[in-house]
Each structure stands twice: as structure tokens, then as C-alpha cells.
Amino acid sequence: MRMPLLRKLTRTPLAPKPLTCPYCYERFPIRDILFRCNTRMSRTGRRCVAKTDGILEERTGNRRELGPVFSADGRKTTAVCPDCASETRYRVCPVCHSQLPTQFGLVDNLLIAMVGSKDSGKTVYMTVLLHEVMNRIGARLDASLLAADEHTLSRFRLNYEESLYAERRLPTTTTSAGTRDGRVDPLVFRFSVRRNGPIRQAPVHTLLSFFDAAGEDLVSQESVDLNTRYLANADGVLLLLDPLQMPGARQSAAPDTRLPGVGARYDTSVGVLTRITDMLLSQPGLLNRGLIDVPVAVVFPKLDAFRHRLRRGSPLTVEPPAGPRFDVADSLDVHTEMMGLLRDWDGVQIDQVMANNYRRYRYFGVSALGANPTSDAEVAQTGIQPYRVADPFVWLLSELGAVGREGRG
Image (cartoon, rainbow, N blue to C red; front, side, top):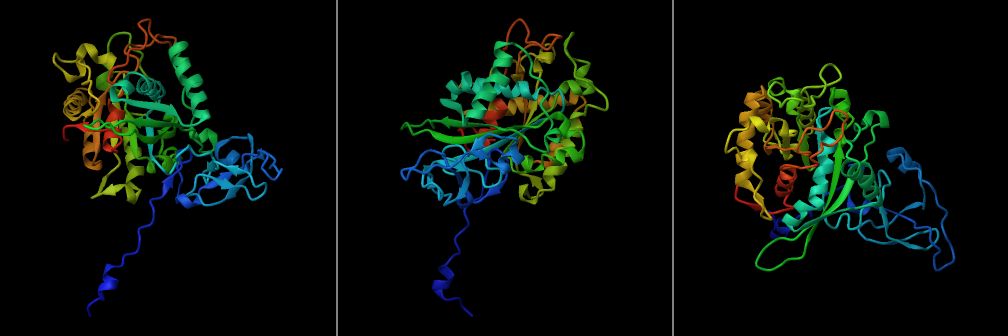
């Protein structure tokens, strides 16, 4: 029996893509976004009383007294409080009740998870990376990076940037999610970039959420499971594997290099990679033809400890091209060079795991500080001299369509 033409042409409209909260990484449709009263006096002379939000406190630890939360059409940017009739622009996540950034749901929202073993230097790397993108790299890309909320602004400046750049102190260890009832505290930024072309276009805005998993959260499958929601919903992953935790690399590091600890409290790079891979493979929506489809930038930090071992003409001995686009050819040269170093460092198993389980991945060699820190965990006298620190981040953005690329591959 032939289907009537009208029926053949009728299609059920696709449901809008669910959004992901940049703070709790839970997913929900845009219409479910809630609003919070601003507690200001309305035109009717009424005002809501601020008090502690039980859900916000339970999910994030925030005990501030705030206006009540109410339901309205989350597709809109404003709503009127049903209790006091005051109009509010405070949109909040329906799950954790965190205030959502301006234009959330109206611009791209990319979640970047950063994971790595204990003492791999994740926090130092993230601090220098964000500082560079706000300054030197931002100028190169014709881009800007701004904190998307007051908490991120003050926390990044005081706890990260000022500590490392002004006080020259290495940050303390990231707090485990296990000690905070499974809670994490992402940093959320607004990344804006102009696309280069014959006609100067308006900037493209993207919300970026950085989640820094503590090394302790990766030493067992149970601890990895605490971060399943954050890793499974991430659009891209920065995976830091410390070469100084590889036996072959430790032996070839420069004299007086600060070596990370070994033993039961620490894990191998392969162990961290294996647990993360097992968790991602258990999420069916992340697979494409049996391979994990989330782009993973595999970052090998502390490259300054091996500078004396790099061959003459190595792509790791020169700065990346200075153009506004991600340079694919340069990145592939670095990737190939890192594969050779993995063989020298007894890290072939890492390459085997990546090749057999991931569809999109790239290797990077970076140095956040540019020199070995002092024995009392301070920046070297030469200061902070980052090297290729932004390459992994820019590659992820190019994979996710947030920045342009030069070349193919």
C-alpha cells in the first residue's frame, strides 16, 4: 500500500538538543530553565525575602541568601516573579540552581574536562593556559577570554593567577570530589573570537567550562565513577600524562628535576588512561563505530625536563606558527615526534590504548613554567616562560568548530 503524499512529507520535528549546565554538567531542555527572584522592590511595592537555597547548598556548597526560585518559560531571558511581580534576568539551572551565564542556551556551550594523574601539574597548566589565552594567545587568535560569573572571576584571580604569577608559588593539590560529596567547582569563561575572511564578521561567542579533576579521583574505578557525569558530558578532554611518571622518562630527565612521587598513593599514566577509557566506553552515546568520539588532547607536560634530549630540528624545539588559525601540519609533526618519545619513555602502551579506543586524539608536548620549579615549590628565578601551552586547547577548539584551522588532518 502506497503512503499518501501528505503523510510521506510530514515529519515529526526533532526535539531541541538538550543543554548541559556548565556547573553541575546535568542535562535538561531549554524550556526547563528556572528563574530566581532578584529580591528588589517591584512596581507593586512588594519584595521577596532572600534565604538560603537548600538545593544550591546541597549541590554546590553555596549558602548565600538569595531570592526564591520559580518556574517560567526557560526559552525567554526574563520572567516575572509570581510572588512579588518583580522582573528578573537571573536564570538558574533546574538541577543545581546555579545562576547560568548570560546568553546561556543562546550561544555554544562547550565543556572541557581536564584530567591527569596526581602531581601531573594540571592546576599549573590550567592557570598558565588561561592566562596565556587571556593575553598573548588571545591576541594571536583575535580572541578574548572573560570570566562568565563573579565566582570564576575572583576565584581564578586570587586562587590561581595571583598565587602563581604574583606570589610565584605553585598551587596546592586539587581537592578530591570524594571529600566534597562528589561536588566539583568548574571555572566558566566566555570565549569570543572573530572569524577572519574577506569581510570582518561579528565575533562568535562560546561558553567554556573547565573541570579540573583531582589526581586522587583517578586512582581507582570507584573514584573515577564520582566524576562520570562530568567526563561523560564533556565536549572535549585535556588529558595530562606526566612523562616523569614513566620509568624510561625519569631516567633521561635533566639533573635536579623535581620528580613526582611513586608508590601506592600515586598511579601510572597507563592506569589513569585505562580507567578513563573504561568509563567513557561504558557511555553508549559517546561511541562512533566502536571508538570513543570525544576529542582528547593527550598532553605531556614538563617538556623542559627533556629539552636537552630533543633531536636537532625537532618540531618541539620551535614555536608554533603565529597565525590566527590552528596549524594542522605543525600539530601533526608534533604528534609524530611525541610518538617517538613515547617509545623512548616505555610508553608504547599509551599509544596502543589511544589508537584502539579513540577516534579523535592528538599528542602534545608542553611546558607551563618553562623551567624546573625550586625545591620549595616556587617558580624558578627565570620566571614563567610557557612553551606551546595553548596548542592542545586550540586543537580542541578547532575540533569543536570554535576556531578555524589551516590545513587538513
